[in-house]
Image 1 (cartoon, rainbow, N blue to C red):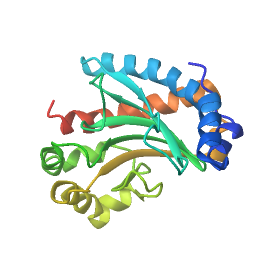
Image 2 (image 1 turned 180 degrees about the vertical axis):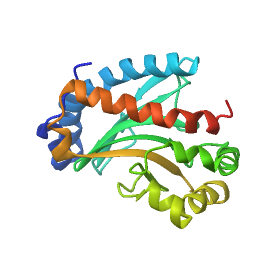
Image 3 (image 1 turned 60 degrees about the vertical axis):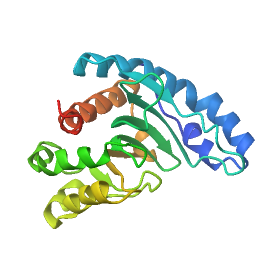
Length: 208
């Protein structure tokens, strides 16, 4: 894999105007998402035994406000990913995120949450510096180790189960300053290690 991040990639999200930002996004970031899409859809297909497909965000519904982030998602459905537990690699202007998520569009949110709540011990196998969040529009979150200690993890999963807009994200963030100094090989290693750690949680979500 040859994806190497630059300051120019992150600066895309400071470009004023929807049309101008989309032009910069398509020119600089989307080709990298497409390469990641090819690489990691194959990775997930091999790891899960189910064919995965990449979905590069198009932001087609936007008419006025430019996107503050963008991503490539991975799911075992060619037509879409939002209704399923899925993986994402994406950028804000401040950081890269590599995550597993179930968002509010998922019709099986309740079952996903119950499966995770019954298997909370699965999270003890994930590095404590991973973060969790309950809102995919919010770039902040709390560390997994803190969430396990103070009960926030359980509360977030209960919210996923009980609240229509409830969501659940878990993964890592790489600050921009660190990301631009990673070689393509170092970034690939980080992505694979992150997805390897998240796969047991994914399999619990889908009851495999």
